[in-house]
Length: 303
Image (cartoon, rainbow, N blue to C red; front, side, top):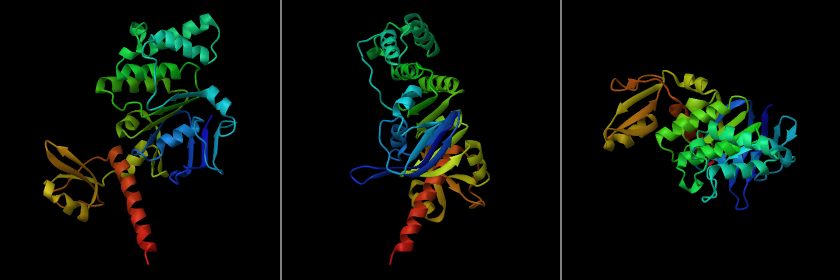
């Protein structure tokens, strides 16, 4: 089963064009969707999850299901974990998960109990199953979100910014769990955290300003930049000069000193050190390329 998206666009009532003719084919496994805040990722997720309408001319199919028209059929196969989701703080985890199982149509009491208990074990929440959700940490709430996501054995899972705000230990536990449950289904991981995609996904896309910038394997994308990434530590007062003279992909502070990553076919000068390309370099190169193309387009149409 594949999720096929064709000419997907979305324009809001205020005129903001959130998506612009997105075309994607997503198969089983973990699919990473990268982009900065406001890129259109959440809009795309909500449309696939049948929570928003698309513009006329758009098409999304999940196997034989027309996602934009057969919404109830989609919801029967869908597991959705939004960036922010509410829980009833004064209800125990097992009790709420049992209630959600009923809403998912698991009517047999013994079957429901077995499923709920299995998911509490799988998400490492068994020991706190009788604890009110209001006392859960951020990572525990995310793991509860995964538990409710898996109640109906979904064929399509959508996970939107799942590790935002988690500490490193909780992030690692959550990603390991997501990787395990995502082996036999379509899982769309929408995030702006490049490392999440690098660690989990065999296929990915980068979007910005509602446009698809890249679609392919993370390893292939990294390979296309191999041998072209250079780094150097510079003084803060030199940054603007380097931005003018070189294709600076990123700037980060290392022990209080700016370190720049530069994209160049050859060594810019002897003070630069060649380094292995990373997915973060791919991400910034795609975003920068879009900005430069937009600037070039404006120059071409300026009288």
